[in-house]
Length: 574
Image (cartoon, rainbow, N blue to C red; front, top):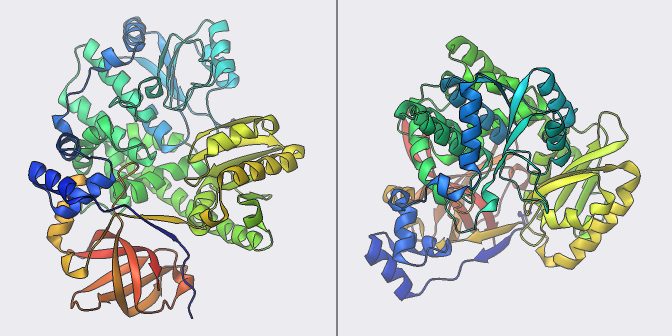
């Protein structure tokens, strides 16, 4: 018998007839869509209606929500009017780079004397540091604005104060026990979790600061808002921020704006990513799988300045040149990721990692910029929390990335092992860390202890949460259009996973330049409809047996002007 990808199937409980009827009658949506909304915890008509039509929600004003925002804008207004120098310290991921580009565009429009710096992933690691602060001071900077970092940078912020620099921190990462001493701290995690602004990414916090400052100057107009909203959309989706609250409201508009963008860099990026035909608007998946990775690849293995120039230039020639550089870096990133993933899989075959209930791999010469991606791939493949580390440039420290599963909180695990670490940070699903090489055995033992407290042996399989049963006869363009009411899909609003029983495989073949993917033609017993399907990174499971129960995401594929529905398989079982 053929091998099958092993997955944990978990089904949302069917909603009651009364719950379904309440939503269908109150909003006019279908029964299936009502079940999906209930799965997303939208249990009453008001919540469901706001989720479908986020513009109907009455939002508080940012100045009433963020207690330091007014003071931060006061400082900016005076510094800009006095032509004193401002410097942005960003981060090298898509969120940090789009945040930096957003503030550069906004404050240059307001007449600011402004520059930026982004730490080197390889030399500096994450966040603002003393070297950057001292460099800013030597260049005559009077105000530092951090974006997507700074909330834990006590040492660097203290150094800035010693040198007489003002600091505004904009960040969205979890709060430390004590906050740095800055003129203003803007972080949505300082708000109550039910506040619509709580889920903002770093670029969202930068957007709030830019728009509020432009309002103060009386220069807030549709052109400026739209140009900032496009960058907000790129950064928010690429950073996997929750697509709820104000994020959902702004992204619905931003996704429609992107194909019509006047930003030369965005136009060039859309062109090289093969999305030029999407004139009516992009989907979150287009950013998540095409635009975002091309931006992130630069921060992972190249120079972030390429992206900042891409997103701030007014020259179409420079924009295309920088977009082509993003494309080249992304190809390089894909090759590196595949190479390291292959090595990691071979290494895991020699380790009894299931006994530990956690994967912890350390190897020489693995690229720091892609080990986080490899960790994600291993979680997807094995369903186990994964930590990967490799020596830094000096060779005496290990720097690593981690990815979790629902039962294993990465940030809590790093806190549990904090005595063995030099630096660490993150959230429940992902994190980063560094440690001295000699501390590795103790660190691994702490991870084992934590895993045995939180992970059962049966948890070590990738989890698939299934929304509803659907038969092939029900899968129509109208159903897909119905789903579009819940766009954009993403974190906290995942694309629904449907399942269909007794599906026969009519054709299957391996595809892709590395022969790693599977394409199929499928038909359900008792139904004449045939669907094309893809199964990403399932090439090694070919041929799959038939018939099967399948779990899948419903997608729309456009090729050579023809649009058709297709299935993206995520799990199968006999």
